[in-house]
Length: 483
Image (cartoon, rainbow, N blue to C red; front, side, top):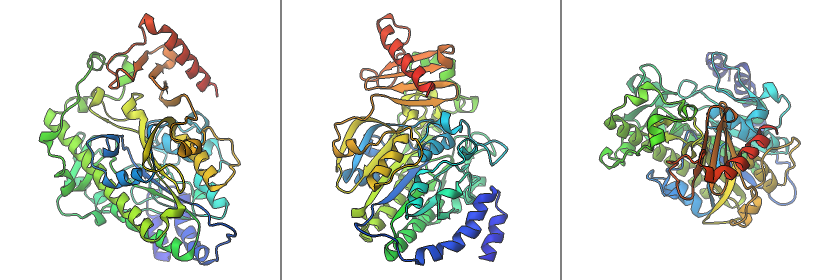
């Protein structure tokens, strides 16, 4: 343990992640060795699996990215076809989801800059009880492997990042060969990877040598231990892919020949980039990409997504093998969507549908199985949903709504609108419409009829025929901002 602590102290990270590594891990063996303080019916476990920067291009959503393991999970659970992030950037989204509060409440409205301790939701909400912390406070073993709260990828891989020590009994930070191969990665901006389109097909490494492969193996070991010790658990497994750089073994690239990749077409608004605020994340490096490079980047993203799906399969297979699946709620999701040249944009954030929408699958014992729902939902809804299914009462106010009624009856709804924000823009998604205001309309408005125009090619915000729709949705955004 002394050697481990010395190594951890050399890692560039905040003090409290080191503290949990050195002190928390020392207490884990004692914690797990104690008899479970559980009486009555067996308590429902939670396995929360998160991908990083994953959009809905998965096969289960009708997309081109092969995802056989996520597809199988959807076949034994409920797929949410219209789930949305609160903020399409990692730190903002994860802080919101895991506290159950909207970004304007958490105060987390940016990714960290030079100060690795800022921003963190506990600066605004020091006494917040996070989702995993709620389970921890109620006798569960709360553990995470990989990225649940924010990490800077790839440089923070293997560290505690912006973790929250109050949330976990056990915290494991895997680090694999992908972290060591940055000198081989192709990137649009030399020396930059996390915020820049970049990729690498690893010709030598196997799944188990990559960070996500190591993370999957660590999750399996924890599941085996929980099963052996008969401990109720909340286990968060955060995979790093398909976040840039899109790195995975070569065989996943071979599944997606570039000759079969069709580049998206651009609308007139996309071409002139109006309103300008909607396209603020376009940059000269991305614009300078050749069509061949665009296809290679999309190939690499799908390869990384399928590689990540394979690691999901490793964890789910262990859950089944250990007899835990029948008493465990499994949630699979991502922190936000992602652009792959659609609207002429790459990565995130924007308030277009492809960036705000996230994959969400919930497989819960005794609930809906093998079907989908069009009910609108938000990531902030996961906290009250899991708390209700486990019979736990949150001590803090929450901004989400429980999705249990939808899990019981998939054609039900619990909300008539879903909200997403980014920078000085706010968006509302209803059954038919996506409406966006930038700086309360001063920097532009966008209205799309997603029933007739799912690719968001025609902005109807100034059309006289839709003035009443704009007025109604604008009022909804004003009410949302005032909460």
